[in-house]
Length: 353
Image 1 (cartoon, rainbow, N blue to C red):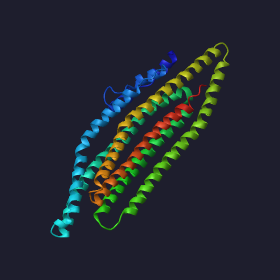
Image 2 (image 1 turned 90 degrees about the horizontal axis):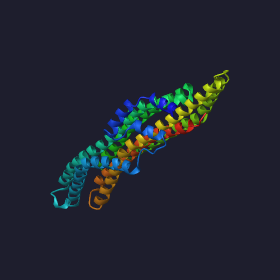
Image 3 (image 1 turned 30 degrees about the horizontal axis):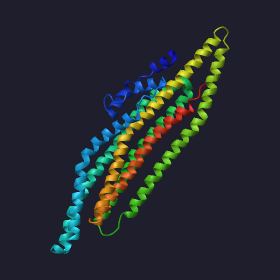
Image 4 (image 1 turned 90 degrees about the vertical axis):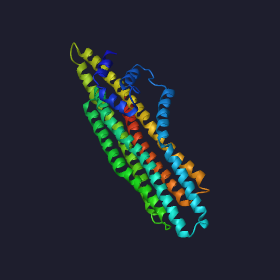
């Protein structure tokens, strides 16, 4: 285990731990401790404690939005009163004006709620990519001990390219497109004519297609690399071990030490990779659950107010729920790209030399 500890000590975990403290809070997740326990064959976490951490953060976040949901219900009821008792008001124009005033107030509350949730999704992916930028150098440093510098360099370049693609596609294209989709769905309710439905459907279909295509292409490249590069690396390292073993006198010793270092590097690499996967899942758990519950709450409110409220208010809440569904899809794909990539690289390069 001396060689394993030596490889473990070569990696700096300070920046990774600082990032974990920002993401999950102080003293919530010790990255180096998780890696060390995994190297010893121990399970460093319990499902119960992980779920408790996720649900505590979830409850604290939802408590902040409780007032917004109450306001939405009250405004929906007021809109229903104005819509159902138009005949009691003096003139249809006065009733429509009163309803539009309520609808604009309802729209502002709905927009505030959606903006807060959208900011959660954006912050989640932004911090996740910052974490991956810090984690990857340590991960690939441990990979270099078992795979060599050539294969490790190719994997590292692909990982950086994946971060760039996720940042550009999801944060700069998909998220603004989802916001436009939401605004079009809301603006469509201000007029009796159906003006923006087809445009909103087009944006939704394009967003869904781009996300699926991005995930499929990046994972396909990842699998292809995993099938080819480990074999190339194995040939390189096997040649080095055999050549060193041919040295008279000290060849067997050098060959034995080289094989031990390769195995130690593989163990540390896999431990760092598994810990990175756990960290990403823990960090993404709270935002994803919050997005899912927010979507469910919008649908629950809609189910209760639909019998009494105006159809335009119901359509507005449906637009928020549909837009949240796209945000959930985007955050889930962003998280899964890194989780699956780390898992694939650990598995494909985990064969002992």
